[in-house]
Each structure stands twice: as structure tokens, then as C-alpha cells.
Amino acid sequence: MASLSYLKRPISETPQFQLISADQPPIPSKFSTIHPLRRTSFQFSQSRVSGISPRRSHVVKASSIESTRVYDIPLLSASEAIERLRRNKESYKSTQRYLAMYSSVFGGITTDEAAMVIPMDDHMVHRGHGVFDTAAIVNGCLYELDQHLDRFLGSASKARINLPFDKETTKTILLKTVSASNCKNGSLRYWISSGPGDFQLSPSGCHQSALYAVVIQDQSPPNYKGIKVITSSIPIKPPQFAIMKSVNYLPNVLSKMEAEENGGYAAIWLDEEGFVAEGPNMNVAFVTKENELLMPSFDKILSGCTAKRVLELAGDLVKEGKVRGVKVKDVTVEEGKGAEEMMLIGSGVLVRPVLQWDDQVIGNGKEGVVTESLRKLILEDMKNGPSTVRTIIPY
Image (spheres, one colour):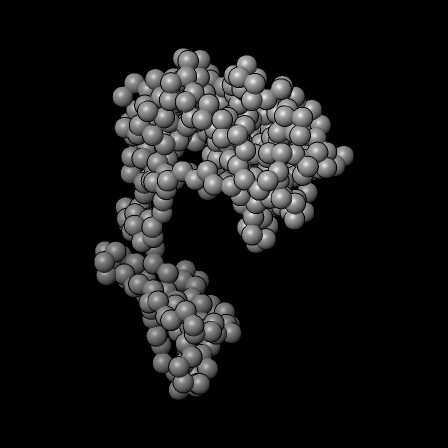
């Protein structure tokens, strides 16, 4: 009878997967169950051809008929699972560090990356029933926290998720999470989900909505170089879903992947009437030949906090004579591709010049004066703007 005794051993004594050379092809498999039913193993047939072996193995059983490799999967304790999470995180490099996480599920803040997890039965995980938002951390202040928080709570309302806390309590939790991280420059991302409860479709079994927040420190340097964009072939979200910042980002991801596969940075969506809409996670703006700053209206797309702040700051450029005026309206593709300047605007890219859209070079193919001026204005605003856009973090 098969034994489960190894499952009781310390993690250091449990079987480990052995990595096999990646250039070895996978082996056709057959699945068999080994009794008793408490233990199921996967048996993979192996060719007698020399040098051919499965990609991963750690237990080998010999047979006079055929050679097989049996995959034994250890049963882990909670502490062993967390330790493996920690080792897995340390096994690869990332430009991002996660300095702190708040979870209303465990009712506190952790600075251990291995503990920054959420329940699998949270409906945000398996049904996409959740919303999120973000705020930049600049010189010890959260930039446009109130503006992002208002949009965040509005998204939760549109998604019909009851708030776990009121606005002021949520704001206090977010500030304390950043304070615990001791992060002076980075970003704060936060989510509200319908909560854990079960794996059903309806959230009626979720006993309480959940709030999560993570402080992220990106160690890669900022990049404001000019980029290429393409027109997305991925359908844009219907307005009902586009105007809320939900976790349903599959169209956004596919749009971004499509751009990268075609040598671009991002893909531009058009709405159902063919007007310019937005990028996968940023707004778009143009400077016309008449020297007007032009931005698509927000009635069918996400209302970008950074984009709206740029529109406010652009008034300085009007006073300086760098632009004649500012307009928010429907923008045709012809107007966009025929513009003197084009830019992407968002909390991640700030204000980044677009030098080419599909096969059309924008303007003279170089970053324009207005794009550069707007980026300088937003950077200065993030560092030294008024208290209405900068919330001091109580470290």
C-alpha cells in the first residue's frame, strides 16, 4: 500500500522537483490513479530513446516493461507554504518591491512579501468582481489621493460592491499602510472586492466586502522617450464598464500585448463611432495644427485623474502663449494622426510623447514643446503642488 509518511517530514526532507534541460521535449502523458484514493499520482510514459526525459521529476520507479516517473506532491503546513512562497519570490528578479500590504481579511498590515496574499474564494479572484485605483507617492506625499479615492469609491458603487469602510476610514487605512512601509517615493495601489465566501457566481455568499492595499516601489528609472502606438484591434469595453476602474483588464492586457508584438508601446482604442477613445491604461491628447490642446471626452472612457489635472495645469500654457486654448471633445482618427503633437497621459507614464501612430509619423517625429511643458508642469505639481493634490503621509 502506498505510504503518506513523507508528508509528515520537515520541508527540508520532502521531495523536490528536479529541473531538466529546457531543450528536452515534453513526453506524451498518461494519467493513472494509484490506490488508495487518498493519494493520486501522475505517471508519464517515457520513450526508450536515449536522452529523452520529462522536464520535471523527483521520484523515479523502475519497471521491466517501461520506465516511468511518478510526481509526488507534498502536503504542506501553513508555515511550509509561506516559506515556499518566500523562496519563490526570492528566486526571480523584479524591478518592483512590495513594501507593505493591508488586508481587511486579516485586519492589519504586513511587510512580509510572502504574506501578501488574498483568499482564492474572494470573488475578485475568480469572478472579477472588484475595483481598484492607485496614487503616486512623491517626496513623502500621496499625489491626488482624494481625487483617486473619489473615483475608487465611485467605481465600487457602479460595480454594486458595498463599501467595507467609509471614505475617511479608508483614507486613514491607506495612509497608515504607506507610513508602515516607510516609502517616500513609489505608488500605492488599492482594491475593494465583494469579498471571500465561496466559488459561486453571485456574491450573495460573501459575508463581507474586502479592502486591500499594497505599497509598491519601482526601482526602474523613469522613461519619457518618444514612442510608437498602433490602433487596437481588440474591442473596446462598453461605456458601462469602461467608465469604472474594475479589475477586468483582459481587453487592456491583450491590447498592450498586441502593441508590443507590433513594435509599439501601447494600442489606441476607438469607440463604437470611430472616434479616438483611450489607451490600455492611459488617456491620450493632441496638439492641433491650430496649436490647441485637444483631449477626447470622458463620457465613454475612464475619467483619468492625471489627465484632468493636466487640463487644469494647461491654463498656464495658455497664459504663456504656448497653446491657443484647451478643448475636450470627440476626436477623429484623421485629426489625431494629423496633429502636430500626440501624447499619452496617466499616473504611470505621466506625459509621454507619441512620435508615430501606425504608419503615420506625428508632426516632425520629435517631442513637441507642449508635451514637454505639460510633463514639467505635472512633475512640479507632484513635488510642490497645493494641499488639494498633495496629502502628507504621517511616518
